[in-house]
Amino acid sequence: MSKQEKDIEKEPQDAVQNEAVEVEEQVVEEQVEEQTAEEKLQTELKQEKDKFLRLFAEFENYKRRTSKERVELFKTASQDVMVSLLPVLDDFDRAYLEISKTKEKELLKGVELISNKLKTTLKQKGLEQIEVASGDVFNADIHEAITQIPAPSDDLKGKIIDVVEKGYKLGEKVIRFPKVVIGQ
Image (tube, rainbow, N blue to C red; front, side, top):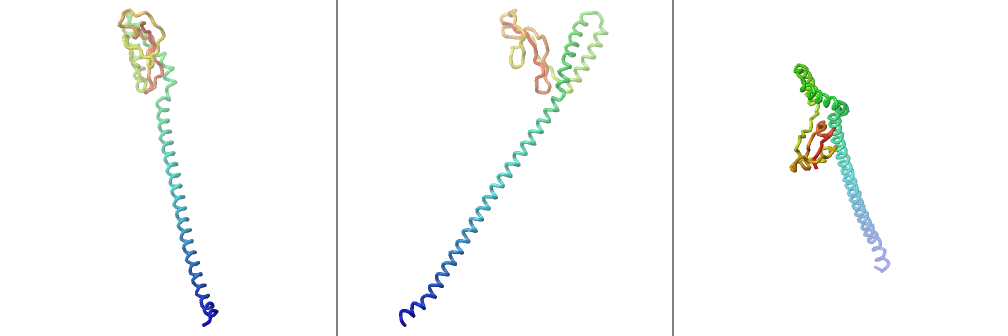
C-alpha cells in the first residue's frame, strides 16, 4: 500500500472522528446552554417569589395600618362634640357649688341628677376626667400652668395649689389639659 492509499484510507476515519468530536462539543454546549437557561429561570423564579413576598407583606402592613386608623377614628370621632360639651360640664359644676350654698335642697338635687346623667353618658362614650388635686406635683406634660403664686408653705413649692379648670381625656388622648395654679 502506498502512502497515498494510506492517507486516503485515513481521511475518512479522521473525518468521522472530527465529526464525532464536533457532535460531542455541540451536545456539551447544548447541555451548558440548558443548564444556564435552567439557572436563569431559577433566578427569575426566585426574584418573582421575592417580589411577591414583599408585595404581600406590604399589603398586610397596609391592611393593619388602615384598620388601626379606622379604630382610632371611631374612638375619637366624637371629639368635637365632647370638646364643645366640656364648658357645659364646667357650668354644671359651678351651678352645683352655688346652689349648695342656698337652702334650696330640691333644686340642688335636680341639678345634681342632671349633672350625673350627663357625666355618666359622656363617660360611656369614652370621656374621662383627669384626676388632679391640690398638693400634687406639677408635671408640664399633663398639666397646664396658668399662673404661679407664692407657695403658702415650703412643702407646696413646685406643686399644684389650685385647679382652675378640670382636664379630660377621650380614650387615651387628652382633649383638655387641667389648668392649674402652682406655688413658687
